[in-house]
Amino acid sequence: MATADSPKPRIVQRLEAQRERHRQRGLLVRMLYTIAGFTVLIAGLLMLVLPGPALIVIPIGLAMLSLEFVWAEGLLERALMQGENARRKAQETTTTQRIITGIATALAVAAFVAWALLGDVPLLPF
Image 1 (tube, rainbow, N blue to C red):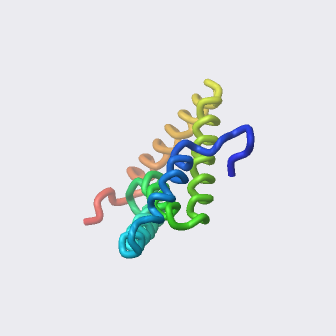
Image 2: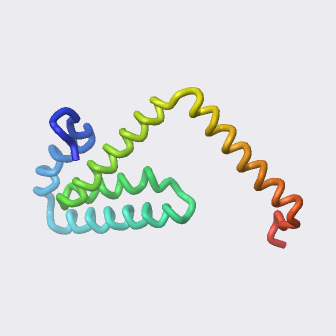
């Protein structure tokens, strides 16, 4: 959650303001919005193991659900704060850390290619 020295993300503040307008909508619209929010959230969670932009879709689903549910607002706020912390930490990495990460990634790719070529691993399934 946000503390006094780190305010809530701007999108959470906008959703809090929009919540009151959303509560004035009809019950059917709110139910459809909730169903759509759960659908988007579940799709995002599935994208954690399936191909797709899970880290974009999950917050969209949480944003939709945060108009109805306080727990979704809390999860969205935590996810956005974690994303902001990760972005800040990535910016704070040193050149040495970036070089070591690049070398490790290149070695991992080279090891996989060597294993695929020398280990008689079929590259195509047929």
